[in-house]
Image 1 (tube, helix red, strand yellow):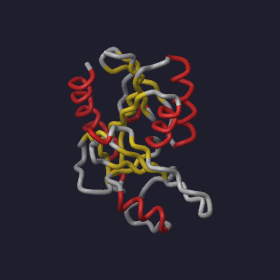
Image 2 (cartoon, one colour):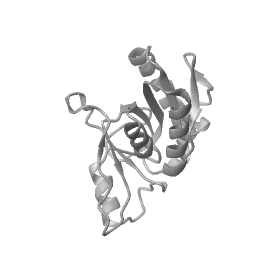
Image 3 (spheres, helix red, strand yellow):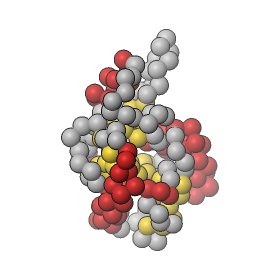
Length: 181
């Protein structure tokens, strides 16, 4: 097993301090806080691989509790005259999972109206979160491998989020054990 750094946005997603003896580090909710804290953790622990895990919203046909290994991440940045942030491919094309994650700093609601760019990204991606893009960006800038696993907790209606997050986390634990231990 390599030197793995486990990061999650909030303890509410899992309620654990560690996973199979590996400490879970909380990086915070949103792109700025998660980027800053991921960077600090990389500097402190010098990991070979960062594994980000947590809940996400469904934008496609995924089921509640389904764990998805993300292949590429997209950002919601819309600077109009400034070129849009690039897509980050976190898995080599030869191993691409096909799942696209859209990271945004606002809670996605399936009945809200959004800008043209935001709507296009929603239509292109399978799931939505608030940290994946920034964590991946920091890892790639620091030359640290990164894997992102998200479990579907809602589809824009977060009323059952806590119960659904628990289902997804239990599913993630099994996948993590199989793939990383």
